[in-house]
Length: 226
Image (tube, rainbow, N blue to C red):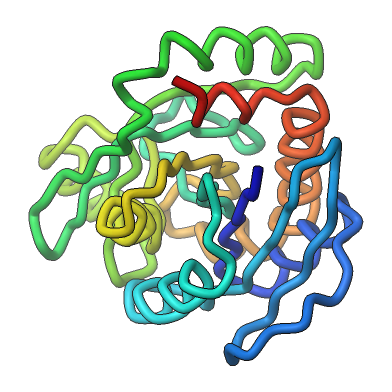
């Protein structure tokens, strides 16, 4: 089994590499990639760069070279729900493209009963807060209550980031299952950037530790087995 993790920005990619003990991976494409084998599962992380343009270019080239069985969208996000606190992990099997006004679903949505319970049980043991829901994606920094209100009126999403919907678009076009694990670093308000820079290292570490545990427990095998 081959798993490809997308990490949009350097702090996320660095903590992914640290927690999963990833090493240099020889590649012909012009992106940062590191890899490891955990529990007989090939793991590869790619620093895609932030936003739609980078995802569409760098994820596609990574898929063409690596040919993964599963894609995991990872990174940070801003909470749209006051009850979802910093350090909560959003598992999204749907994501809304703000500019295109399009809801994109993972093919794993229909199979969530097969894998979601096991993840929730493990998260309880690890004392982590998990929230399944929708991510909304747009090409801007969310840093005002007015914009948050506008977004929440469009769709009942739990969090906001720049990339998840486009990861799902690319994975669907290539017929590869995909799922999103994003950790909350801010609340998308006027303190969003300050909170993001304050929290990104600690929360990214927490996220990738959890993903490693799920890999070691073979949870992701259920995502591609019939």
